[in-house]
Image 1: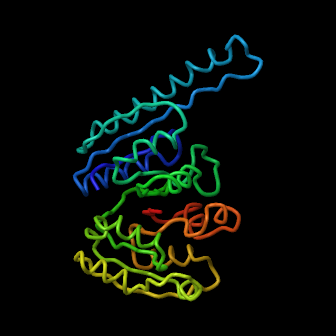
Image 2: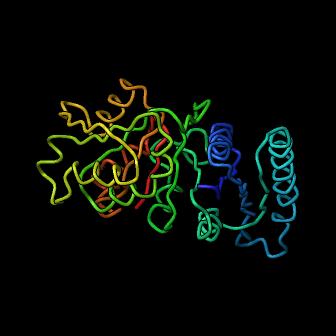
Length: 271
């Protein structure tokens, strides 16, 4: 996990995800690519001379230059290999392009606006399109401890299996691994990969895990998982994403949507 793609944007979660990317790079002797995509103002109908664009363009460029200067100043003091990639256009497209030769994408839990509530649209777009796993970082994270206890959310699905395989380098470095399944959820599922299959896969790669089955209770599946993670001191969680269609997730909720709305742990996701 040495090629780390970091989303740079001027939002409340930037400092947390920069720190997470640096911690990942130190853990795996990795390289961080800081991708900042500038969205320029669109030509306004009726503004035939482009005067509005001419006025706003310098402000956008100045803000982008200021952000780059601040981030590069901070990174220059770190013992991590990094590069800055400046581009333009929709950030999800630019991240998608660069993700092809990246091992993991580091994103924030929310979108650019500080007042945003609900799951990150950017994370949702990349989960649906990219073949690269993403690490969603809570805004208040101070440090990503890659060597701490890890929580794996298991429901026997293809998505859970893919996430487990993608997270193997992380799990091999974790101090302990908990493979957790929700009892009620497991009874209703259509999948035929019990927790023992996931545990056997990990064992073949030298990772011992503790299988835990817990009841959901009155809260959501996500709340149950976060509560378990907190009680065990887990420093990150691994889970598959979008087991249902994205439309169903948006209309009806779903574990992925809940997890992305207000993550209490860094979440490593794959689809």
